[in-house]
Length: 135
Image 1 (spheres, helix red, strand yellow):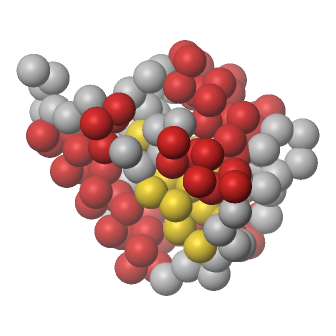
Image 2 (cartoon, rainbow, N blue to C red):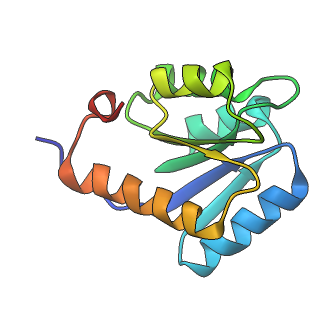
Image 3 (cartoon, helix red, strand yellow):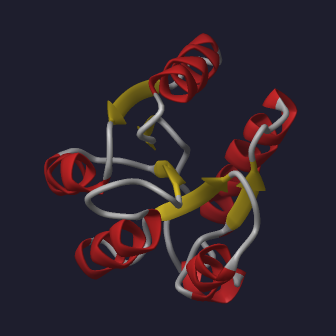
């Protein structure tokens, strides 16, 4: 059984500065430590070097899209939790959930959806559930 864990550090990966700032401010005001990356290329070194508990990741980004970022991150840290964000549902969003994302949120998202996503991640960690079983 996995030890209970709480969400402390969240990484936001989005190529839109306004979205990064909005999410960062919201999550910081809720007491989380927040790190940001412009895209998947910037995100991977952060994931490698930091103890990230949850990632909010845009699906459509230049240089490395969200699905590639998710898959590369899962190869490094299989139990890292991902919530994907996107403007419209498509094949990449579906593939992201098939590859371990715990949730996909459509933009523009409601801030309550962000809070609910963090609570879902907390619940997964508190139950000691393997991420594979959350799909």
